[in-house]
Length: 233
Image 1 (cartoon, rainbow, N blue to C red):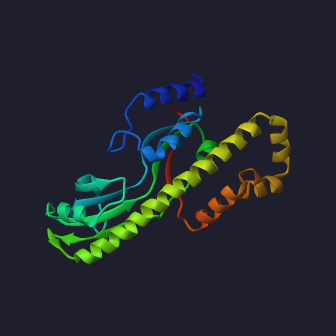
Image 2 (spheres, one colour):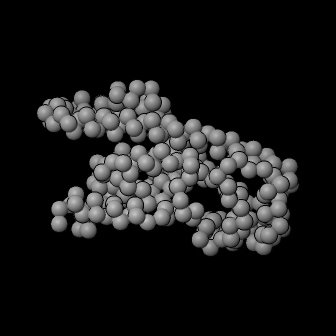
Image 3 (cartoon, rainbow, N blue to C red):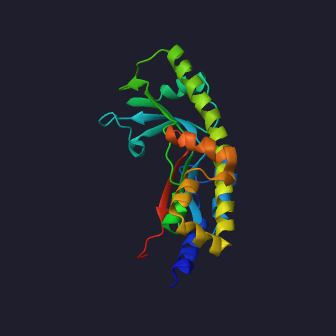
């Protein structure tokens, strides 16, 4: 079967199912981004999260939190208040961890060059232990302080989602224009130094891409996980 036709069939099957995230649906703040990706023939999303604050209860294994083995005491995709965390902590029997997680997208890509547009990572997170064996180890004042930081990160995360959407839209539009002018594409390939320079700082995206490049250097961009359509699928 033709590779493109097979990916198209695979995509149809994937989009016919519910989002594989714990929530089972796409968060409001990331709907447009998911639609943008799914509207392109070379992509489809399988799981997504616009960003969340969560309180987990479980055992810390080598100082690593294994979410699949934890009890989810609290989860919100909006700013969180101290009283909600305090109430949730009363249910903790193990080691409670407060976390902020930024944008997460799991995207299936048709081929390597499609995945390269999306291959970025994020360290814009927060993970702090609050209790041990059910005993609260910090003050309520400190919890309030942590939530201010987490809520600030949530607001910044929304701005980054919007910025990433705009940059991705520019990149995909440029790709469409390039693919529609194959002669110019071949000419660019013959000038490797020029091509390399354009890849590092595409003028078509203007300030949007320049700001994104700076964010990449700081390793603080939204997190995207990509899977390339296997050659032998």
